[in-house]
Amino acid sequence: MGLKSDYVREVKAFQPSPPYAANAVKAFLVGGAFCALAQWLADWYGGTFAASPVEAHLWASMVMAGLAIVLTAVGKYDDFSQFAGAGATMLIMGLANALASAAIEHRSEGWTAGVAGQMFKAGGASVIYGLIAAYVLGLVWPW
Image (tube, rainbow, N blue to C red; front, side, top):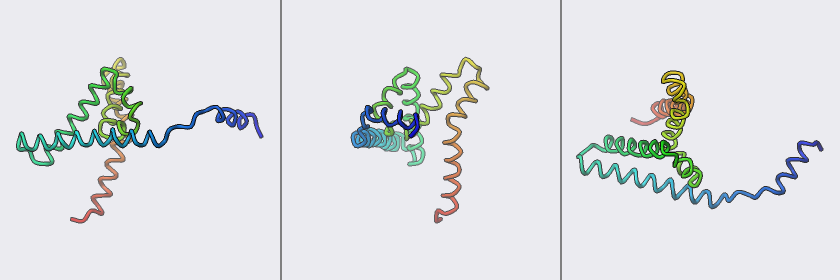
């Protein structure tokens, strides 16, 4: 073989195997808890403020994104997402964390090139693929 393949084989012998089942359970429980909290907020907004279901879900999404931004600003979201894995990064909170992290990290470069430019780099893929998915679903969704 080669030096590189020998090195990779030797390193793999000492690496622990990741706990896939435990990680999946943590992601499921944490993601489910966040979704349940968001649904409770939407129901609460609908009942307390007589908001339509769409408005109530929008308010709940904004609260969840705001929670992620606050946790990112105080430096706790990374620790939490390291524990929760995909359960904390695949929701709207993950996108809010990515945008807030980029804004905080590049604020010294100015508002346009730093904050706005880096935020678009971080969240641009989510926006573009979200628009594409919405367009495709709009074409095939039965009216």
